[in-house]
Image (cartoon, rainbow, N blue to C red; front, side):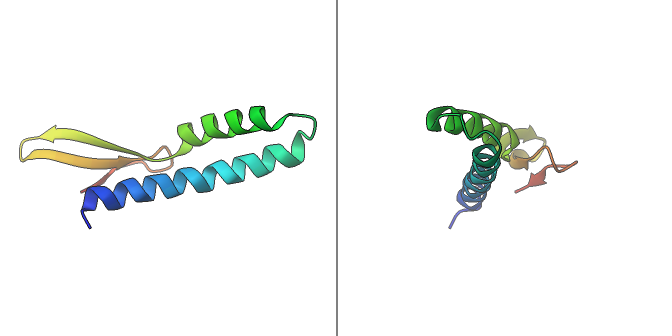
Length: 77
């Protein structure tokens, strides 16, 4: 499996985990909120908090990085 594919899968799995955690918190705190609004809020927060795969141009060529707001430095491929 390609390293880029592994990083994209890691990013997707992190998105799903964050989505369900945020959805569970919203579900227990705001019981009167309808399901669609819970999903939209959870999806927006998960998209903001999930890691992103980005490419950057360096002297040695194109390099892919995994950037996350919880990490100070990006993880390079």
